[in-house]
Length: 279
Length: 189
Image (cartoon, rainbow over all chains, first blue to last red; front, top):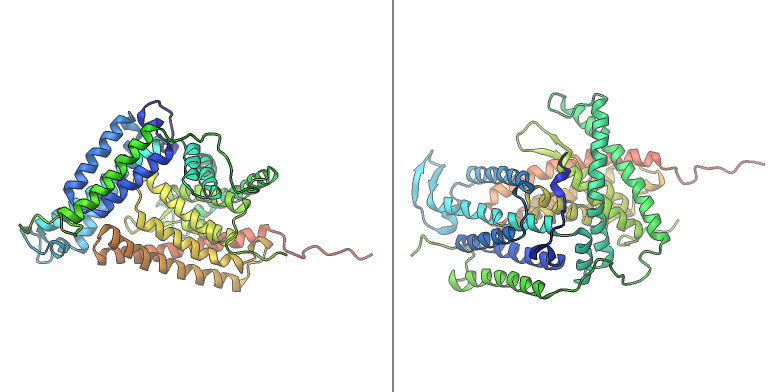
């Protein structure tokens, strides 16, 4: 089924060779820079940058096609809802009104509103290549190891690496149970009445959860038997020291973040919004 | 019987967090119940999140919903809507506070426990979705206020229904699979 959404296929190129920690830092820096700025020029710059990185990683387009469809639906919905709820929010932010045309008295279309909504969509879309890059090029166990080296408690990173390790297993188990229940006649579609549908979903959930709880006992016993958590530190088989390229990448990430702050405080005079309407 | 510590993080909690987050992610992606209103689905994952939080405590509750929501967001959309992910984590943490009083793992889940669990989960969902998520939306993303508060209200109701109905059912079912303390009696000579 959709297990393919989340597969890490090892390749050998610049992006793949970066440490998981580097990728996380860059991802966070770039996310925060577009989250903070409402300047569409800067957001477009970051979008181009993240597309270049995506191209450098040589990922295949079909690996991300399904995700892109989800993103497009989500963004379209957000666009429509924002307009329905606050058709004059742009005017409120930018302080001017340049009307293009109107549907009714409440629903006018202004340049300000368009700029605001397009900026918002770009804010979200600009990070999609980076997010997918991070997800598809990071080795899960290496990621946990490098998070630990960054100072996160190894118990928490171990929980994260367990999540990544067991995610595909649980999807497989979910598929098995769901198919078994469907072959026994359980219907999850809209044809069934609401109450019955909830019951049917619970009928898949209960075996899934009980088997997960059993697995928790099994794994935690195995870990306890091997004295997990006895010491304050642990070493990681996959841990690797940061290399020259890692530092370059981190520097680029930090520059992007600083650039966003600089745009806000020096170019736009302390406002997060770029206002082209007041000359 | 040793007393449960609220913020303990032992091996079992770590494993429960890891697997719970994986389970939360899977359910968040696949097991939604359509309500008939377009684009409004009841996320059954919050029922499971609440269940795990009540069994394993606030840290596990926070991490399960935080990691789970962040992971399913990035798998599905390639990007993370941080304000809602944080709100998810906080609601899990608050539900996890019930961990100390509930004795589900000893097979006890009576009417009082059901009321206690549901009052706590209502508070948790109200704080997370009507206060934290919309406020962060406004601060981080500058979304229009009336939109995010409406979305927050809808999310609060649907997640409270999910945690309340599914969480309670799961806790009751699970408590029945556990043997009660003192269920064995010494045979008379």
